[in-house]
Each structure stands twice: as C-alpha cells, then as structure tokens.
Image 1: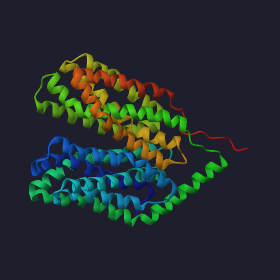
Image 2: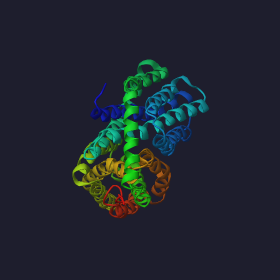
Image 3: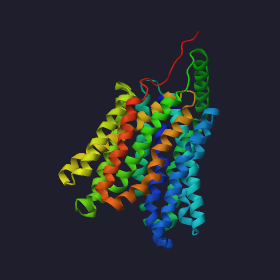
Image 4: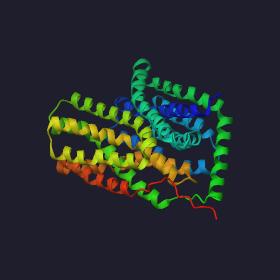
Length: 393
C-alpha cells in the first residue's frame, strides 16, 4: 500500500502511460500510410478523432467523477487507451482503425480528470501546484517515449508490434487496482469535506472567474498548438535552414515546455497561481511579436526560449485555478482545463494554416500575437483567490 503523498507519483505514471499512447499514434501515422496507402488527409482524420474524443468529452467524465466516487475509471481508462492503440497493427479497414482510435480516446478522457481529482484530494493546499506539475510532467514524458517505443516495436516485430504498446499501462493498472480500496476511501473523505465546507462556510463555485480562465486557456492552447505545428516550418521556410535544424529547434522548444511545466506548479505554490499565469502570458506575447517582425535566426533563437517557458509555466496553475474556482466540481474543472488546453488549439490549427498560406508564416505568428492578447488581458482579470467563502451566519 502506498502513502497518500505517493499518489501524485502513481497518477503521474498513469498519465505517462495514457499520453504514451497518444504520442505513439503520431509515430504510427507514416507507417499506416505505407502499409495501407492512405493519403495524408485520410490519416489526419485519425489524429483529429483521437484529439477530439480524448479532449472534448473529458468534462463529461469530470462531471461523473464529481457525482460518483469512481477511482475504477483510472484503471479502465488506462486499459482502453492502451487497447485501442495497440490493436492498430492488427486492423486493415479504416473504419476499424477509427473505432480503435476512438476507444483509446475514451480511455484518455476517462483517466485525465479522474487522476487530476485524485492528485487534488491527496495533496495539501500548499503543495497542490507542485503535485499537479508532477502529474503534467508525466504526460510530457509519455509524448516523448511513446513515438520511440512504437517505432522500435514495429521495427522489431512489424505492424503486429503495436500489441506491445499496451504493456506499460498494464503495470500501472495493476498498481491502481491494488490501491483501489484506499482511493475509494480518499474520495469519500474529500466529498465529505467538500459538503461540509459548502454547508458551513458557504463555499460556492465562481463561474464568472472560471469563464475568464477559459479565455486564458483558449489563447494558450491556440498558441501552443500553433508553435508546435509551425515552428519547425518557420525555421525551414522563413529562416532558410535545413529540415534537421527545424526539428532540433522544435525538440528544444518541447524540452523547455516540459521543464517549465515541472517548475510552474512549485512556483505557483510559493508566489500564487494568478501571478504565474500572468508571468507566462508576459513571457509569451511580446516574443511572438518578435518572431513575426524579426525573421533573423539569432533573434528567433532567443525569442523561442521565453515562449517555450511561458507555454509550460502556466499549465499547472491553470488546472489548480480551475479546481479552486469550482471547489464543488473539481472533477469537471479538471476535465475542462485539461481538455481545452489540447482540443481548442487542435481545432484552430487549420485556421492558422490558412493564415500561413495567405500571409506567410511570419503573418501567422503575428496572428498568434494578436490571439495572445486575449489570455494576457484575462490573466489580469482572474480572481486573486481560488474560491469565494461566505461567512457562516
């Protein structure tokens, strides 16, 4: 049995395995093109389905986690996420592949908000930001190792090698099943505390503040997805470097985001969630303008550093702020904040591509700068505290 303080590590390990499957899908796309002769538009549908299913329905499972004590959703989510992706190498029809990706997406949607809720329940108020950062960092590692594992498995065993992708999640699932009884007790304890606070202290959900936070999430998601999609192309087509250089720059950008994600929660625990969200916006927005207006390699190389740091720095504070603003619906808040940080940017990516086609990639980064003003403004409008407490009469 694990100590309560260790649950953040267990949830982070599960997060790594869940996002491991999402990262593996990206590596399998070229192999599916070669194996089944799909065109790029066709296989892009699989990625879109995975992102939308895995992100958009997360609030639904978050809502269920608030209404029902369902730690079993962690194990089932891990199983479905791994089962869907691992079956891809055994399927030949596109509709079957689509269903497999949807199954995996449902697993992702089940795991994220439930795990974030467990992290919230097991951490103290003073350490919550750091705990959420660790949880988020696990997901980053999954996106790093998933493609490497998938490519290696297929190289060794052919397309049937995708069956090995389910293995990492099974180990974490076994640990979760062993802890299920204690996780149930933890959930019951937290629900009793929440009900008591709501009754005695008048703790209410701040929907107005949460709407402002969603505006921050929208802008952050679009900027992050735009940078992930077009940064390497900017280095290649605007700055005139080789493809390998562009890919290296993108890897550095990912690394900056991962490291700052790990640090963001700890900084927020010390200095406040709102301050770190504001700081991240101040790091991102001006340097997007620099990228758009100064297409020089030396300047661009400096500019991506604060952008990469800013994108990762606010990840954990956003999730914690959402949970604090909706203290009676922490599961749903987790689902919305985690889901929107991925889905909005993915949906908006084709619009950014159209802007790039029309006005060039420097014009696209100028559009990102304009979009970045939205989260910058709303970050200052966020409530200073996490929740409103009305004194008992």
